[in-house]
Length: 255
Image 1 (cartoon, rainbow, N blue to C red):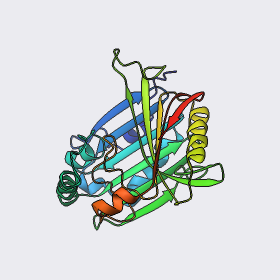
Image 2 (cartoon, helix red, strand yellow):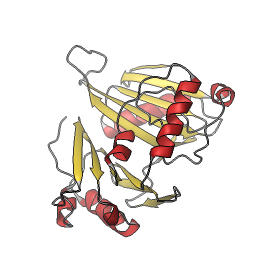
Image 3 (cartoon, rainbow, N blue to C red):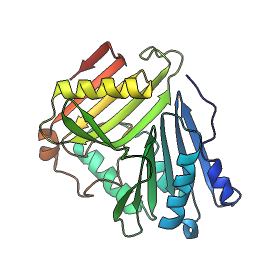
Image 4 (cartoon, one colour):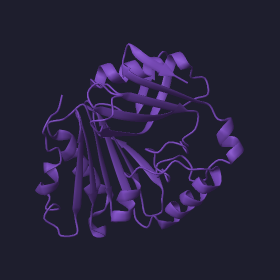
């Protein structure tokens, strides 16, 4: 199902869309929308960001949406572009340090799941604050008695030659959870996401930390991590991770 909606018309109401320093890019994939906005530095205050996001959530919604705001195009780019799969931990670490040190401005990300919406803001001192704007925390999922915290998601339309998803779309979800999660609980989480959001072609990845170093659609420098000090290669490799890939709820394989 595809919906031609403009969820960010609220931006124009506060005059930002007419600002020559404001740039927007919208990606629509199935019944989801992801919007990336570069704002003038002086417009990036917590009060203005919260109001923009409230307007975003009041618009007619799709089942899943994301709004990213930053003050430089390079910061926006680092939060949305696929990365090359690293050939080694060292190659990833060097890129991580470069991106972390190059991030010059604040950034914000709103994720909305149905009527739930959660805003995270990284301020100029790189401190992170979280505000729930909808009917509940959009980042908290419970499946099979386990709590999963959504870190990020991405979606893309497949090229015609790709046949891995029934509706020509694929979605990746990244979660952190405590060390007790099981493969069965991740399967339950995957089924819940697909049924609740009406998605097919879903990959769900869960780790007991927030470091998805080898995943091309997860940011190299993830701004909203509890820590910006990465694990050692040994600690990363010893971490627990379960990945489930599903075309439909009846066709799920995990490893």
